[in-house]
Each structure stands twice: as structure tokens, then as C-alpha cells.
Amino acid sequence: MDALISQLQRQFRDYTISLYQQGFLDDQFTELKKLQDDGSPDFVAEVLTLFFEDCVKLISNMARALDKTTGTVDFSQVGASVHQLKGSSSSVGAKRVKALCVSFKEYCEAKNYEGCVRCLQQVDIEYKALKTKLQDMFNLEKQIIQAGGRVPQVDIN
Amino acid sequence: MALREIASSSSPELHVLAVDDSFVDRKVIERLLKISACKVTTVESGTRALQYLGLDGDNGSSGLKDLKVNLIVTDYSMPGLTGYELLKKIKESSAFREIPVVIMSSENIQPRIEQCMIEGAEDFLLKPVKLADVKRLKELIMRGSEADEGKTKKLSPKRILQNDIDSSPSSSSTSSSSSSHDVSSLDDDIPSSKRIKLESRVND
Image (cartoon, each protein chain N blue to C red):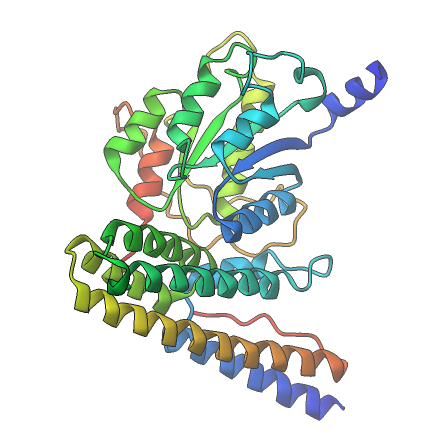
């Protein structure tokens, strides 16, 4: 069992580090991990779940606001949703999503329709990619625990 | 009832009212505060905060006795009542003006920060809020409550981001993000802790 646990822990460590290296996560995610303990073992997963729900809602708002068939586009409305998404992505350490929101916000301010539509598509892809990556990470954690091991603290330098 | 009040007032647990329209941020700030041994009440708007305090209708002192909020932490940009407007209302209230109010914002806008400090905000936190921020805040508030009631709380210019966050019972790890500038030479209106906070943020 020990060999399995070590292997899983190594996998977990490598995978987590890769997420940071590839820019999916930043140090705010590390901060969230600090808030998790035996008393609140699922805190990070819970917050991220809320974040992904937020993504669905806000992206839907943005899509609606960018829908030309309903009339002229209200860029301030789009911008308001982008601002919210920027905030929550920042709070959970979703680095790529946040960076996209920064560009998105600029396109809103410039009232650049094509730019906004592009950003909307990208942000949709990006949050889904992060969601998949994190699900894989959480699965590794589960496997470690099921094998009787502890999830290692990963030191990101 | 009186005995319980005495007992709870000698307990070090702060009761914090956290105001933020973002569900994600509310969850995070709640956890940050709880892990720092605070009692937390979260509300999603300035209006709800005023309702909670009993300030929405008449300038009610009726809710005062059981509430005992020791600190209010509020987001700046919220629909409806902004954090700034909430700050003003609290400072205008004779019942609650002594409660320290801390503003949080994702935007590092100097005039905004100054405006809040002038209006009486205790501190200004740049989002995303970290554990080190909350611990520093708690120390600030605890120290303030130990001080003489009559004196106006002034932030000491010697307060720098500290590495020695070891007094907390929580199991959090090293505080790697603090940069210890000595800013006692600065003589600005803006208390130095904010300045450090702004300077150490080298975000995108």
C-alpha cells in the first residue's frame, strides 16, 4: 500500500506544480489551501464549486448582453459581469481566467464588439479547462486518502 | 443575562460583520475570519448590513444590546449601497461610529483609498484578501480595544508587515508574502500600513 501511496502523492505533487507552471493557478490558490484543515477538509473544493457556478451565471449574462438581436449592445452591462468574474477568479487564484477578464474589460471599455465576443469564447473555454484540471487534482487527492495516505502540502516556489 | 455578557466581553473572540456581493468572496472572507478565531456574520449588501445593525429604519438602538459587532469588513464596489456609502452611514450613527470599518477592493485606486480613510475607515485591504491581511487586521483591532477608550486610534507609523505571525492558534504556514519595509520616515496622511500594502502588490 505504501508504494501506491507514494506514487499517488508524487503524481499529485507533479500535477499540482504543473498547474501553477502552466499558469492555471496562482498564489491565491495556495492561500485558499492554507484555509483548509481537518475541520474543513473540502473548503477549497467548495469555493471552487461556487466559482464555477459563478462562471456559468456570469458568462450567460455576458452572452445575453452581447446579443445584438435584442437591440444595441450595452457594454457597461457586459463590463459589470466581467468585473464580477475578474473579482471571483482573483479570489480563487484562477490566473488565466483572471487575465482574460482584464483584456475583456478593456474591450468593453473600448466598446469593441468583436474583441468582446472573442474574449467571451475564450473565457468559456478557459474556465472549463480549469474545471477539468481541478477535478483531476481533486480525484488524485481522493485516491491518496482512499489508499490510506495523506495529501501532501505542495511547495510552490 | 448580565453574567453571560460579562463572560463574552472578556472573551477574545471578535464578532465581524462581512459585507460583499460576491458569493465566492463571502465564503473566502468568512473562512479567513473563522480560521483567525472570529465569529462571523456575512451579508450580501450594504442595505442588509444596515438592516442587521438596525440602522435601516429609525436610528434604532433597539438592536444594540445583543449584537456587539466588533469590526465591519466591506467590499467597496457593490450594487446599491457602495462600501463607501455604508462606511459613511456607520460613521454618522452615534450607536455604531466607534466600530472599526475596513474597506476591501480589487482596485488599487489612490483617491478612493484616501477618500475612505478620510471618512474614517480603519484600513483598506486590496483583494484578493490573504490570511496575513486578516491576522494583521485582527491584531490591529485587538490592540485598539485594549487601548484607552478615550484616545483616538491612530495607526502607528512603525506598524510594518510583520513576519512574526506566530501568536495565532491556527495551523497556517509561513507568511512568505510580507515585505518588511521600514516606513517610519514617511510622513503622509495615509497610514503606512496601507502604503506598504499598495507597494508590495506587484500584481498584473
